Length: 197
Image 1: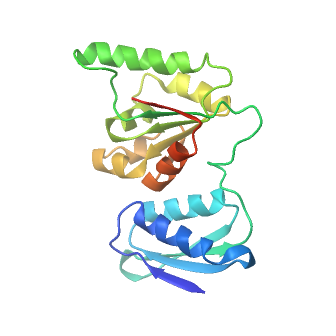
Image 2: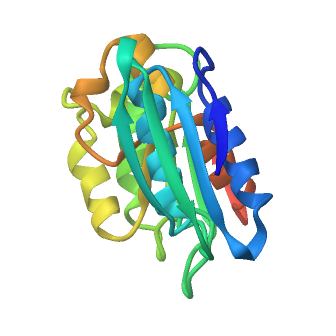
């Protein structure tokens, strides 16, 4: 068993350290135990494990510590592997408005942009939200219906967990999943085409 102490380390460091340890095990697989001190890190580690096709579990320890155990075997990262008919398009949205100038106009434009994404065939493989763009996946967003339509069409919607924590809106996520920066970077790096707003 490989043990990693990732307490006090922020996203995406625990995930990257765990992924490197898993990769180092090769096809034979093995077990990696990662100690973290917050639930977001625990969630990110378990999502990474699921995406790679690995089993994971966690145990809450003293002083808010959590130990995540990942049992490694062969797998493929769900958020990276292309499937037939994928557009290969990834859209990264780092703000809740579009363009410079009027904020009111920018909010109208970003809503129209997200609505228009539904018209693409096939739709984007991923839409990534970070910084103030995180507000667009929350309960107060006027783009929820459009985003849910995209999700139903197969688009993976990921919102930066560090960002939702920073803005205090983690509990308001209404579409897609919370992701870490490593997951966002992996989706960007695997894109055939990338639109960055």
